[in-house]
Image (tube, rainbow, N blue to C red; front, side, top):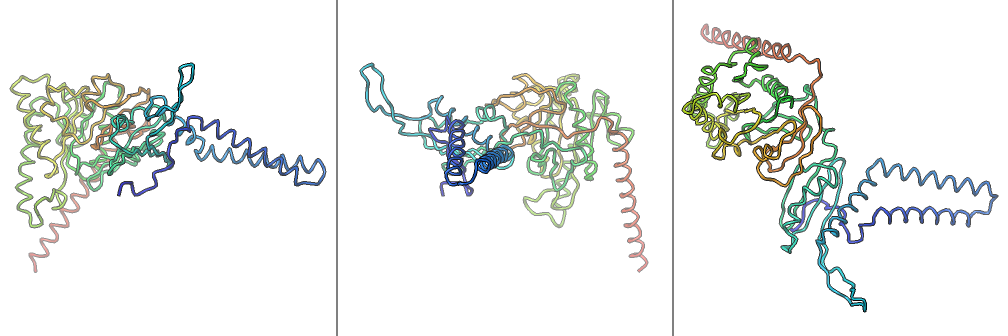
Length: 447
């Protein structure tokens, strides 16, 4: 097999650089031909002929409207743009045919890249055949040109045999969801219609964003979803800001230096103890994770991590970073996950490849080129700036950096009241389970 198991789409031709003009001419000739044929075939009076011409015009306009609504006009424009990209960059091979006395010459194209275009709803699929020619490197890295030229965002890139398929999404902001739709289920936290954090497979989240980027609101959204799922949360807020206010609702919220360091150490010890607990469980098998034996995930949510590390003496931050590194390396199977938030992911406190171990990395707001490099490494990406709260870029662990919109929250939304309600409900459900267990034990004792 040397092809994807789906239709690749329409091939971009060498003459598609004037596809819009050709389409207009074809449409005009079709209308003219129908009009002439109608007049020639009709033997009635002039008013009837005028009526038929009017009817043909209306039907043609309706056809144009349908093509515009269905996106066919956009497809024509995109195919033309892609053809011009190949021609203007001269990603083809030619041979001379003949020379003129003036010194000019004609050329014949002997090789034109096999590039296919297909659109389904808001998804655009571009499939390229790789032939190991001199344009191979350029065809393997088309994402930046296509994102800019087609006004879309790369969401996936696949390779199968000699084919590379790019999957783009148009109108990414339309995939934004509301806070009420954010759920954490089966090891997965959905954050957009097409984006989710699969923490069971790609553990740990790194969040960056300057003041006003929506970073704190995003953290609260994540906390709400995880709290609803029954996960155990350990929250650290060294700046004693919004997250520290949660100490009025739930335990294990820390904001003093000593308390935070103790929390990190306790979290690490809990992870190590979890491995012992899993191995003693009767349902444990090699390769099984915490969920397979019915255990609950734990999340260490650490806001302003870099700012906190800057306040510590060298010996202290080295100890904290050592524990963080071990948790990141070992936590997935035991169900111990870290969510770190900071303004800039300084390599000093996230060195030795630790940054690359975060399965989900999101940068909110506008960042400098060096800031994006710190988050995502060196990539071929044209980062755009838009003044939209909660917007940024994300790497979900598939090697693709794409546009991201945090779940929408109404301006009047009361996080404190909602989190209080969720935690109180959890407490009541836990007490009910305890009573059922006690009643069952008493009944068994009487028997």
